[in-house]
Length: 129
Figure 1 (tube, helix red, strand yellow):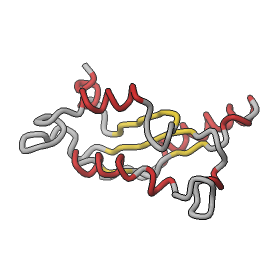
Figure 2 (cartoon, one colour):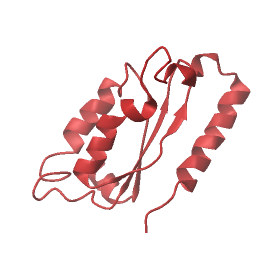
Figure 3 (cartoon, one colour):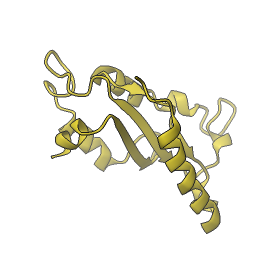
């Protein structure tokens, strides 16, 4: 069923909390089971070619922590390299991600604004024609 849903859409959005510089275990399991050899990649695995991949993730820490001089020492672009490689292997275009940092300290109002911003970002990022 998950593969059918992927086939029905041109833009795939993976939304998750960024845990330990990666996706949660359940999302990784989804990737392992749904993005199968011969379906998503490999000689006959072309089902996702031409689709777009958008990451929408949150971090507990502030954005400043994700800089070469910050606590985590790496940028979000560097830390999402495995997702960029996954998009490349499966023939998808990797879109600029939506990142919400510092969620541990967000007010309800800020969270509501972030929700609207995520929707706008998801709809506004360039669509490949």
